[in-house]
Image 1 (cartoon, helix red, strand yellow):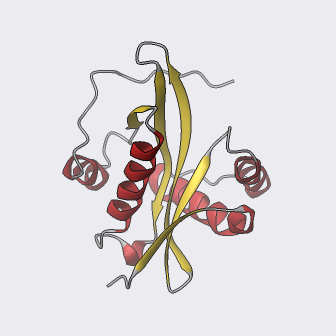
Image 2 (cartoon, rainbow, N blue to C red; image 1 turned 120 degrees about the horizontal axis):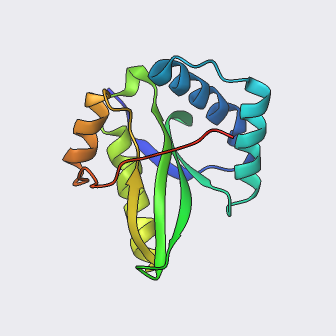
Length: 152
């Protein structure tokens, strides 16, 4: 069982833990081994420039057990920001114990305090049913949008 959780915004000293979590998440969810040098540089770029992204970390006894990253999208339709939740990871031994719920609750508090966040969105792998159940239990609903992409 996860002991008391501390949720905080990550700082530059958290780059190694976030890099490890992102590598584990990519391997587990998509079977992809990420290049650690590129990944670490991407994490560090976000940690020093909140305009790119910010991370929240869940810790117990000073050790990270989960994370999420947030990037932003301007909505002219809503005259405000959409926060995109990405890079969600909870260590396997800490899953199903409320870690993501606490991260999400803290993020919601931050959004409410700002007053200019019009929504939060995330994407999830089609077959990741445990994650989908978690998001739905927190009040998120399936969007009417489909995601298209191109790799450059």
